[in-house]
Image (cartoon, rainbow, N blue to C red; front, side, top):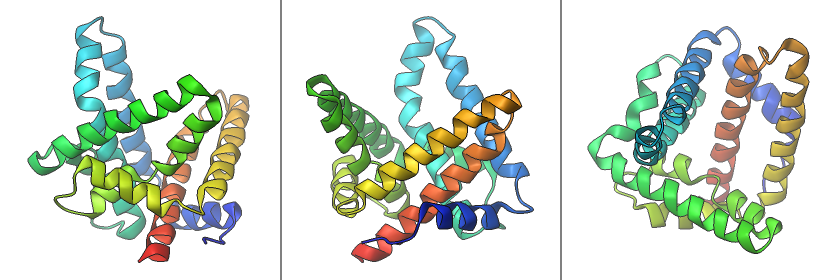
Length: 198
């Protein structure tokens, strides 16, 4: 079982980002601008979001996983890694299969939905790490990987949500730094649980 504290992840994430905040912040801005733009366009925007949501999420995870491993060889272009031929289908499939699984759990009771979301939280990290993996295989890998690590991940998410609320005192400007900090922490968390099951 992963025994690192949430504070350790935040500290390690900060050390990775220290002196390198610009590019991760820019990547987050581009990601959320693209996502929000489609939501503003009636019908066609929704249809486009259905298609690009998964590949774009894949790229977002790709960027921060690469960033946590090798800052020098990372660039904003990784945000669009999910649109490559071999990754588009699995990313799209994982996005919607995971969404349906979580929504299905929420329909019956809130707790099963949260449980499923946590167990599938590593899907895009897994897809980034393994070539020729199907969406279902990635979901299975994430499910197994998060066994015994769910509570820690849940508490991490609650902590990050509480910290995010405090950004209201900065007129939410603080989120520009918090989101890269949190996403890098999740990437480091993935590295630890991956080693655990290796």
